[in-house]
Length: 368
Ligand SMILES: CC(C)(COP(=O)(O)OP(=O)(O)OC[C@H]1O[C@@H](n2cnc3c(N)ncnc32)[C@H](O)[C@@H]1OP(=O)(O)O)[C@@H](O)C(=O)NCCC(=O)NCCS
Image (cartoon, rainbow, N blue to C red; front, side):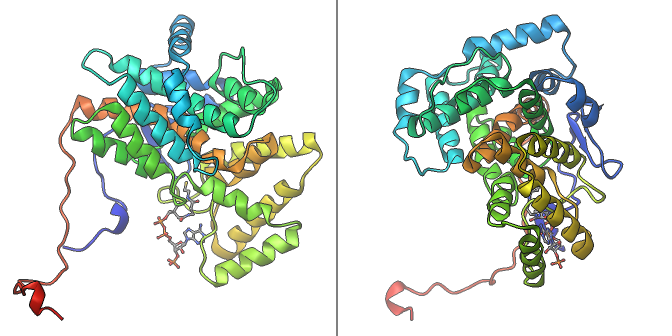
């Protein structure tokens, strides 16, 4: 049997949650185009769609928001535990730890699955904010914002946010919410298939998303962009890196072959923000990198590339980019956890053995 490296092209199960690149460059959540959802919906509306398989009515959305609000907030002991984590810890490790603590405080039972789902959706932002504000105090960490996007931004930055920034942040959360059998979602489903609990599955997802080939790419992209002070420098760097066969973070995709439909949204928001701030440098550098990658490799940016400069212009510290991805993607993860449970079977592929055949055991005293 020949190996399918990285399981490329392998169908690993059925899903009714999302289609990725079915027509080359499209993305749909439960049949709704990402373009329509991004242009018109609230992130929580999309989370409801993913979890409940339908768009909510206004009354259903209000009740959903109320449920999230009612479970938002960490216990004193969780806050103390998160604040005790080192300042230089990676926030994704903080998030993973926070989810583990929450799982010990409010374990999942047969009767409270929905409450656990709401607790996770509402509290991932709180975990990041609690730890971050402890080490980087801001004037105010309170917010009257009801939306996850607005509340997160306002508490993080310690000041009220403009409508435009809340709206574009909301859109970035929608774009990150779901993406089929991507690596972190698949990790959640594997954990779920053993009949483990929702918190454990989400911890698997967070650990998997952290890697730079997956969610960590937005941070790595910004670290790269930030080292340049001119377009020429950036272009020279990319040319050199491609010669050396170094991967450029924020480019390429396993599934999309024409373009990543999420990228245009992030590019437009970044452009608008850069213009408003009167600081185009990182936007211009990003555009030059996109152009060079197109010319030299025929590659297009994925969602993470322009998300990098977008979050940077918003004033968000780079190490929080991947946690923002997780704050959004947890909605997709939970939808997949529910779907896996609806028709479960242990996920256990086989491997082609390529090691040595029958070896004779040698006692340790006789080995060289
Ligand atoms: C997303 C990604 C992991 C998909 O990986 P994949 O389907 O396994 O593709 P491969 O890593 O096998 O790459 C295939 C070829 O494209 C090249 N390539 C892929 N991504 C590249 C990138 N970002 N920059 C430069 N070259 C790239 C590889 O070097 C390889 O070239 P080769 O055939 O000459 O060796 C990959 O494109 C990547 O690492 N991108 C950067 C990380 C990133 O942005 N991740 C976020 C994804 S949303």
